[in-house]
Length: 125
Image (tube, rainbow, N blue to C red):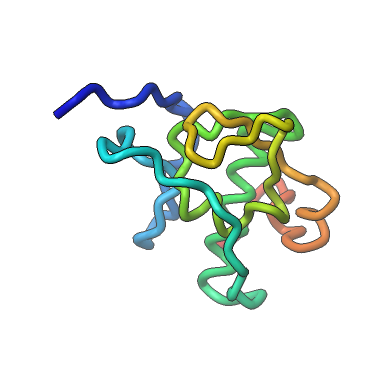
């Protein structure tokens, strides 16, 4: 196996949603290449299990990074894709969907409207 791409590991970030198979981070860089980020339509309705996972992930992002830009790093592409283009956006014009180093940020005004419970101190799931 060749050298894996460099990937920031966000220490202290939750690895997933407890009691489910939903992961928030990946353990190591993908040896076949970085999974590209792409916005996907949200199918989750408020109160559905999928919505709760989106809310829990956004809650973790907010409480870990706040309003500051953050590197994609080891954050799971599937979870990011569910929020991309709405609650999570490119932090600058240098967005590279196929880079672990691309910078993202929470669009707080959109996120507070679409998933307001993610901003509570404690999220009950």
